[in-house]
Amino acid sequence: MGTTDKADEHESLPGEPRSLWLDTTPETDFDPLDGDRRVDVAVVGGGIAGITTATHLQERGREVAVLEADRVLEAVTGHTTAKLTSKHGLIYREIVSNYDAETARKYAAANEAAIEDVAARVEERDIDCDFRRRSAYTYVADREKRQNVREEVSAARKAGIDAVFVEDPPLPYDVECAVRFDDQAQFHPRKYLLDLVESIPGDGGDVYERTRALYFARQFPKRSYVLATRLAEAPPDGTFYRVGDTSFSVRTQPGPDGEYTFVGGQNHKTGQGGSTAERYRKLARQAREHFDVESIDYRWSTQDYETSDRIPFVGKLGPTTDGVYVATGFGGWGMTGGTAAGMMLADLITGGSNPWADAFDPMRFDARAGGKELLTENANVAKEFLGDWATKPLTSVVTLSPGDATVTREGGSVVGTYRDDDGKEYKVSAVCPHMGCLLEWNDGERSWDCPCHGSRFTYEGEVLDGPANADLSRLDLDD
Image (cartoon, rainbow, N blue to C red; front, side, top):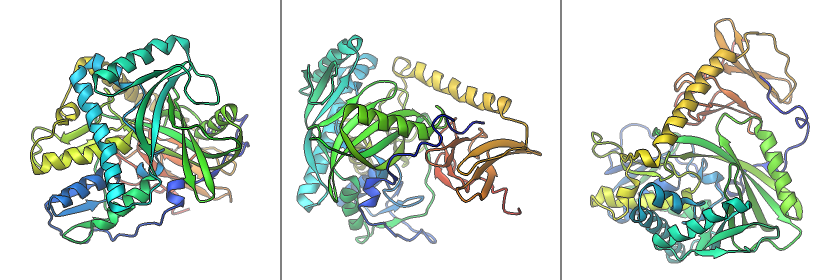
């Protein structure tokens, strides 16, 4: 298979391949779980949802243990754009249309409460995490989408938010119109959450790293990309998000040597959509089209899971799974979604009820509000599975340049081969151990990605993202 667009394969990628959040905070080093440990609640996953849940439960006197497959706050939470907002694209018009205004009200109330929960902790604990109040804008660039914005304003007001229709948002380039939510926020997520993590050990609580986590189905993986830029002009005041097939977001963030402006977007389904390196290049071109960019210092990407109706799954896992709860499917809005989930789960675990919980119930299903999308996504998975097995090359003859990778059949095996910059080759099974889909090469992150369910692996075969929980077989160890 071709791994890059040949016209652009030699164009260097912008910025250092490192998240600003990880680069400006210390690493954690908690021990793995060794032997048995009995607690009131085991929290599986050390992102914002897990850490917030554990914090709320500890405050209510519960003994908790956080289990993280790798390092806490390094996966999705360590690669977010960290917009702390209840303004999630044009979601309220969708919720009102698919469900009703009451469901939209509960969704809004949960996310608004999440912002205030973070704000209160920042103040009470005096956390130095660059917390700032901001107005949040969602805008459209096409005149034919203007009515969608007006409908979003109306739906958000029905949900209890004082939304404002804006003809000319404060951006240095032309847009059609926007919806504005005031009194939203942004912060440094790791600085905030590391303060919470450090308080969990003791009082019966523990954090365990390098302990495998679980996965929840009925959601669909997508990747998106971020560049941390420095501008030669004043950055825009607020957080901004353009809806569309490949969204575009903007926000500022203090850095060690001045102000950064994050630009994000180029979202696509994991393992599909061609060269990921080219997506970084496209995002850099967009940044330069919209702003006077002085430099691009960092680049990173993240993987989010989205439900078919765009409302996260938060609550009891299933009717026969008493005592097992889930929080997932935040669709790129995990800072408020994960915080709200932690608040809801703490209520459900300790008291059995929460005023917003039925809107997020994992057992919900409404054909109007996601049935079509669920069928479409499942058909896409089937197409990727059957199409890949039918079309992958049969040859074992391959010549790779440094930095390239390919999938071939060698004997009875389907092999993914990557050649590093020094010419060393790494060979792994190119069959995802989750459900047998064939993997695709991600040239932007140098990883093997599953186009069916979003599992990702290093070029040496180690799991980066689930649902797979087993590494790929190494096929070069006897070379």
